[in-house]
Image (tube, one colour):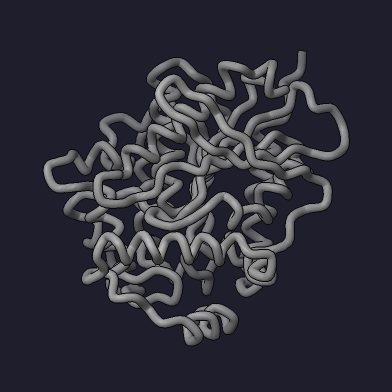
Length: 321
């Protein structure tokens, strides 16, 4: 099965960097250029146009030891009080920005309706491991829920939603929430990369789709090297190897089939189910990694958006009484 034509055209127009040989300063320059491209108005033809029923704006969260930038999506119509909260974490790992997810997040804000907060977390770099992004996501979630009245959200109706590397942040937030008594109603994990241990590449999908158009094994190797520096504990940022996955918020795991990490998502859904946590696994044959951020060239994104919206609506609907 081949990737959608639009994806193949985009790949043909762009040269794949030499990821293993890229020095830190070149990675910094690549990140700046790539995130500027992902934020440009013209790229909307690829990343999708925001829903008209949502207001979008940047804000800053003042945490005790740092500032975290967030992109906030609010419904235009209806009440701005007692809304469900969806905390979103974009993909990319060493690149990426919340802007690339405006299409899906504005739709959720307008049509659930909900307050959607997308975390512009610290990106991977030399000296910035994945644990930094995990802490940014978790601390943002706790801050918003801890000030629910100010944000106009109902703290009893919260969910986390992560894409790719952001799925690590979302999945670990769900685990920490259970451990601290913070109740989440749902977690959505899209093309999740949930194994950063020595077994990260020991999956059939890694071999079958090693040179996929939107994620390659060399990219994954760079991602893993930055995410888990030598001497750190890879299991701490690998939800697949969490000691206990029981009692977590019900999960929707969305897997594109033409993806090196497709088996990560399948394995995680299986582990959740084995632990007794409800987990729905949906697969999109012919879709590539990061497809939800590219609705303009990957038709499967609309079906995924519909199932994510339906799942969250079912989980975040106000309880009677």
